[in-house]
Length: 177
Image 1 (tube, helix red, strand yellow):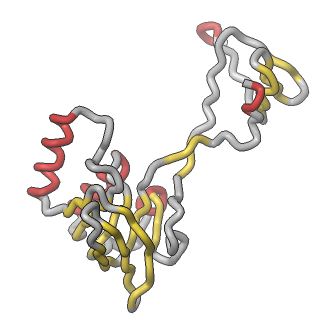
Image 2 (cartoon, rainbow, N blue to C red; image 1 turned 45 degrees about the vertical axis):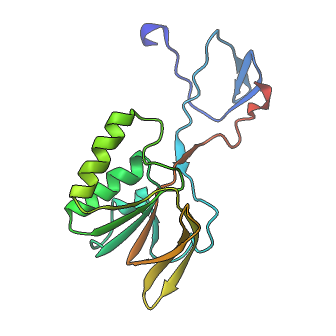
């Protein structure tokens, strides 16, 4: 136990605020860190479970670089992969439901990033909702509605779901908190 930290490995349940139960033993402490990790958020979009619709984990090991990658999600993960795959030569379209990319970050930084993405010919569609993902002759078609109500269909080789992450909290019995 270095620096007064005790690490206990196992499946835990937080049944009440003063007790974390692991393997039949109740542990208590003034402060508790639950380091559960996270998992990819799969948005409820029809077709999101189809072929050539990938997550950021799968984007790390694609067998070939797609000619046109459609990124759903304009947050940090979406922008990272858009930039990476643009460097590899992919045409990129980023679709973000919010009014801007990387929301919550510094406004000057966002403006600078958008300028650089434009220079790199990365297309950004903000304030745009994805309606569905379809198959079209071996390619993917993403139907979306822009803020002005106009619909657009974007075709690409692959769709990256980069809409965020969720904490791994199943089975921890957080109700006790």
